[in-house]
Amino acid sequence: MTPALILRRAGAGALALALLILAVAAGAALGETAIPLSTVAATVAQKLWGAATSVDAIDAGIVWNYRIARALMAAACGMALAVSGAVLQSLLRNPLADPYLLGISAGASTGAVSVAVLGLGGGALSLTSGALAGALLAFALVAFLAWRAGRGAASVILAGIAGSQLFNALTSFVVAKAATADQARGILFWLLGNLSGTRWPDVTVAVPAALIGTAVCVAHARALDAFAFGTDSAASLGVPVRRVQVTLVLAAAAMTAVMVGFVGSIGFVGLVVPHVARMFVGVRHGALLPASAVAGAVFMIAADVLSRVVVQGQVLPIGVMTALVGAPIFAVILVHRRIDR
Image 1 (cartoon, rainbow, N blue to C red):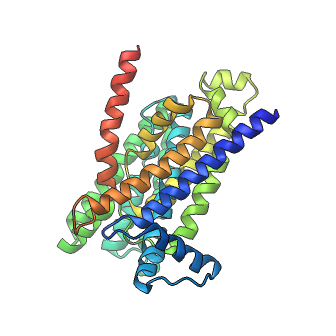
Image 2 (tube, rainbow, N blue to C red):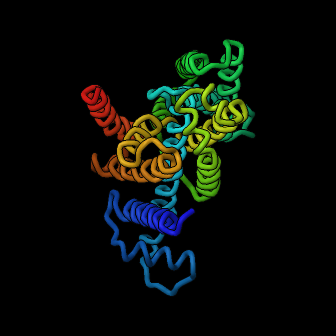
């Protein structure tokens, strides 16, 4: 590695870190009531380093216990979903692939609804634990179907569609059959993506999960480059195709399951963000995956802020905001690709 390349990568890393810090700070300062950035900085200094700052206790509580935790959860969720989408689009060689293609989101929804409505686990399972169990069950079913259907990319996509439809139908059946009106309303809100219940213990799980999963994917960046020419070409270049496929799909599935378990279903992040990142950094995964991670984190924090300020006195499900922003962006990308051809 040449010194110039080292400097360029160090500069890109510093820029990415600065963007993330700025986005989290903005997420903590903006909301139903604006709080000055100086108050945010003083609160962080007080909580992390015990600095003797004079911050109003209510503002400090809002910033530390509500907004920063929420912003970090949004960042972790955006990072995990965007990287998962970029990996799946490359592995499956399908620009429409995203984490929900594997039925993980639908399975998580079924698991959470089973805990909330049917009392699955007898009180021993939390909503998040039920969602994680459902997500892993759905992924196992999709993997089994894909394996029985021939293991190819098309088999994975078709198995994912079948699994998603099955678990979505199960969720609707449970809600229609057993949920009260209040439960149905709460479940609908959660299914659309909800960061309102985020607490620091959730963040301490979600952030490491996103970072570790992203690191695993970045470590296989060169192998993903080889997959652009097909599995046969990747194998001819010395890539252990089956091992790389299993590792990366498991990493994407685990990241998605953790995030869906905490915040519910949030669409368009894994689909749109990788395409936007490609427009700026190209298709090489050594740059694409870190760019997707940063862009996904910033996008989710921005969507969360919008969800709290668009309608005064009401917090919208974040999935609504990602869809309202993501769908037009994806439409523009589709038109742009058509024009380019």
